[in-house]
Image 1 (cartoon, rainbow, N blue to C red):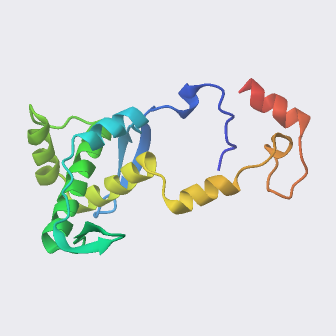
Image 2: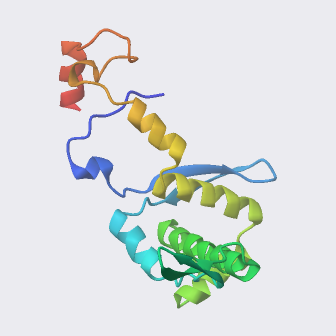
Length: 174
């Protein structure tokens, strides 16, 4: 694996498309450009989704006030959340994929994604999109464990010797 680069501008952390290689069911490989979305793009896409509200299951009195008990296990609510999640996934993938997708409107393009893409490609690209656009708990844990002092930032591991002036100069030059 190549050495990490030292980010010096926001461009280093930006939305430059990445080339992703997928293996088709017939064994052939296919390369696809997928663009990581900016935080603003993801926020705007999330805002387009109408998330369902859970139904009221019951009422209870708490500290003299009547409060609603919501039914988060309601089959209709669970199905609504799944449909909202699916629509968000389609919209994110539509924005991230750097290929021609037929259709004049977003709805037509999402229909084209649903009908024109094999399930293997959908699962693979959804995994890629999630990796580029969402941080999992494991990834956050890895990020937190990667924190080191500036003196050891170029060390090979957390217990390796600290600063190597030649490597620091080379990293700064890149």
